[in-house]
Image 1 (cartoon, rainbow, N blue to C red):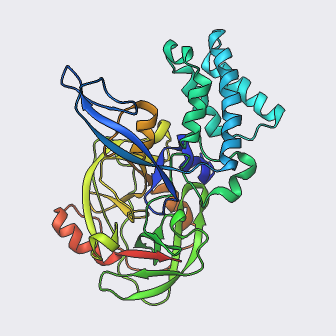
Image 2 (cartoon, rainbow, N blue to C red):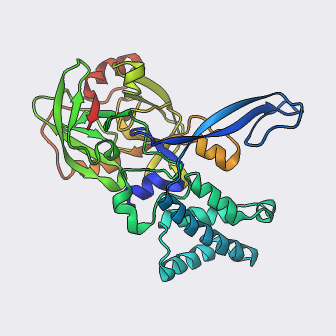
Image 3 (tube, rainbow, N blue to C red):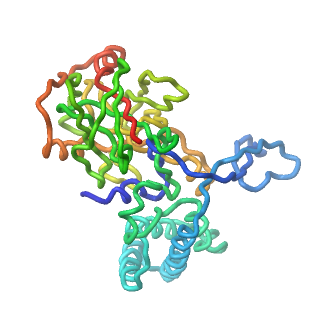
Length: 380
């Protein structure tokens, strides 16, 4: 199964690629308060009179005219879907009907966004319908949900918002056009995320000992957000790739370079488990992981306790976007592309090089062993 990057990364429009920068933002206020039952609440409207509250601000993306036009199409489709739902039509039948309508009328909405819109409308409660579900869909779209643009614009849109819609193209450091992410050595090449290097003219990699070399994109898979970089000179031993997928609950960890401008230039290790063997909306190409990741972790290796790479850290769920949708703030929901999609690139190109053997070991020993093979990727 191979879908465009825009579909992998814009799924529902609420992923944050942990690699690139966000654009200009405006402030959105919400309130934190405790109700009579002792439950902490987060609301955009003020709490009941006399209730102590803490006012907070969430940054939201500015809405362009292009986005408003796109969301107008989403609103129109949501209104039609609401009619299907009221008539008792099934979800699958509504999906088919909307796909035919979208193509017949030339409405410029991506297939994945359309599917998510169907789920949004059909999962709404009766109360939501009473307050205009199409209007709620419009608000969600303006807030960043349902992807960014339609199929006619996908080719030119990958740089700007991956998954945004509520997904901002990732969160790597971006200053004066510079983007940073993480890469790692395998088969004589350096693996990373496609979105880290996409559209960049100058790419460098910095090794753990501090020396830098120029890199060039060798092979890339925009559809699944993986890329292989070539560099001159000798490379450290490559990380071994897992021959089987990680299972639910498997212990995993990553080594990477988050927020180097704040956290420092040394690699950072974080651990967690495989929370799901599928990603957002059960996307089979992704793992959901509890490993904490930050800006700059994009492209980093996700390893099992044998030191084998099972995936590449790619995205995190946008807490702000989910809050706008549900009133709940999700915690530590992150995603990694399965390593099988990198294997497809390696079948087309690779270089003779030494590879580390897999071995069960402590995290401390793993970190010391693989550290030299994990690099900072700097793209400008």
